[in-house]
Image 1 (cartoon, rainbow, N blue to C red):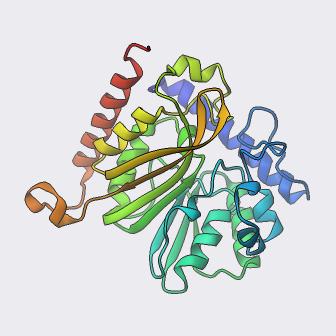
Image 2 (image 1 turned 135 degrees about the vertical axis):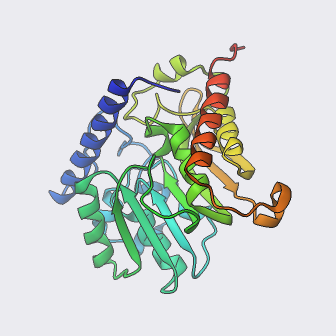
Amino acid sequence: MLMSTSTAEELREEVRRRYAEAALAVDDGGGCACGEGSCCAPESADFGESLYTIEQRGELPDAAALASLGCGNPTAVAELREGETVLDLGSGGGIDVILSAKRVGPTGRAFGLDMTDEMLALAARNAAEAGVSNAIFLKGVIEAVPLPAESVDVVISNCVINLSVDKPAVFAELARVVRPGGRIGVSDVVAEDRLAPEERAERGSYVGCVAGALSKGEYEAALEAAGFGDVSVEFTHEVAEGMHGAIVKARKPAPFEREGGDARSAGIDETRAIRDEIARRVVALARRPMR
């Protein structure tokens, strides 16, 4: 799933532009209006605020719910505990950060990372309206998380990893920022293993969270290459033929579980090596003959 620099930059800018438009649409008093071919599909129960319970929606400002563009509910599967530090990759209007901040309580923290100024501004307003003081929003890309190594207990994300233009870098960053014994709980669009990348692209656009989706096997291989264990990818609902909303879980082994008991933090060289190994495994799977 590698691409040229120019193609990657163009896709990232298209994603940024579509989600900026979505944030502005909410600011204007409308719902999700990011346009045809985006993750947002207000007419479908496969995406957006309908995937959250009535009780959860009741905890949120209207603008946070309206700005929800995801394909799942990661806070429902991450098993958050009081006092934990949570990171949401691609936090959008802040819905999952706000819910996470409430779950971890005043002794915990919830970070939201997004590359879109408009979404960051909307999320900050939503958190203030929700009365949440332990939500922190950061500007950046998920391929280069602006947090120290081993600084978070849980990483969540809602239909964002499929949009990344450099997925090996994302998984390497997961390995870097998650503390030993920490975990991930991600909602994402995932393809069945029988679909080649070209077949996924036939079913939807990149900004529509379809063309860039990994297969189940590719997801598992990438997380395992990054050093995670207890990896599971569970399909929840079909969003296109052979493409599914999915719950992705994994755990980073604690120091005593690692071979040789090595408890060192991943340095730059190790992070690069992890990224290269993830890319190798994902490419190998993508090139395998289809049945």
